Image (cartoon, helix red, strand yellow):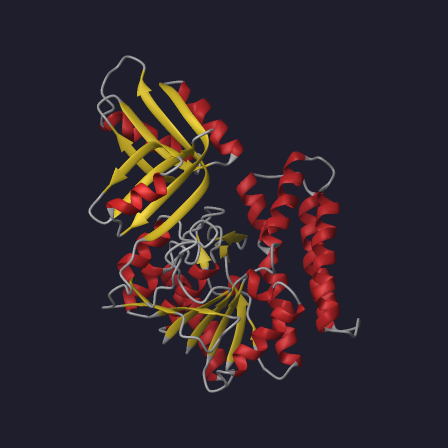
Length: 424
C-alpha cells in the first residue's frame, strides 16, 4: 500500500484534477490511499468566511458564494452534465456551512474547524467522482470516520489507539474487499463528540503520515509543484538547488523551522516505522524527486535556508530588574500557550527574554496586553526570521547584507537571524 498526498495546487483547476488521474494511472498495480487537500486557495477563502461570521459584518454569505462559484466552475469543466450527482453532494456541503452561519458564533477555534474543514470534503468529493467517471475506480472515505482526536480545535491531537482501530475497520476492510484506491481528506478529523477538528494549517501532510503509520504503508509520496525538496525557497534565494535525499533528522529540523514543503508533524509517525517519504513533482511524475528516510545522509550537503516573513520580535524584562528565572519563564510560556502563539526562536539573558513568532494581529495584541501586566515589553513587527541549517560563516554574512541583525543565535549546525531591512 502506498499513501499519496495531493495538495491544493495539485487540484486547483480542471487540468490539475485531470492530471491527478494521469498520475494514478502510473500506479495501477498498487493499493493507494489518496489524501487530497482543499482546492487551490479554498482554505484561505473559507478563513475569510469565518472571520466575517465572527465579526458579524454581514458579508459571510457573499464570501461563501465566491467559494461556491469557484468550485462550480471546476465542476462544469469536469462534469458537463448538470444533473451529475456530484452537484447535489457539493451543494449539501455548502448548505451545512450556511447552517453554521445561521447560528450565533461560538468559540472562534471551534467555529473555524466547523467551517474551514468543508474545503477538504468538497475537494475529495469532486476528485473521487471525476476519477470514477474517468476509469479509476475508487471508494470515497470520510476521514472523520477514521481519525479521532481530542477537542483542541485548530491543533487537534490524535488518539492513536482509537484511530488505528477505526482506520483498520474502514480502510483496511475496503482494501481486503478488492477496492484498490481510496480517496480521503487531509487536515480534518473528528472529536469524540463527533465535531470536526483540524490538525493545524497545512496538516494534510500529517494526515498522510498518520495513515501510513496506522496502515503500515510501504511509502508516502507528497505531490508538489516543485521537483523535490529545495535547499531554499527560490523566491528568496536565487541559487536554490534540489536535495536528492534527506535524513529524518534534517527533515524534522527543516520542517520545525518552517520549511513549507513538509508539515512539521509529518516525519515522526514515519520515522517510528521506518517508512520513507518521497516529495515529487506532479508536473513531472517520472522524476526522482527527493527521498527522506532512515539511515540516509542529506545529499548534497549544502546550507539550507528557511525564510519566514511577517514575524514579531518581542523582548521582555522584569519591572524590578530581577532575573528572568524559571518561575518567570514558566509564566511566560503559559501565556504563549494559552493564546496559541508558537515560538519560532527564543533567547534569554540575566534580565531579559526575547522571542520571535508569527504575527497574527489579534493574538499578537492579546499577548502583548497580557504580558505588559507583569513585564516591560518591547517589540518589532514586520521582521524576517532566517534559519540556516548546515551553515558556513560566509553564508551568514551573505544573508545579513543590507539588513540590520536584531538577534542572532547559532548552534553547531543551525544559525538563526532576525533581520530588519536597512532603510536607505
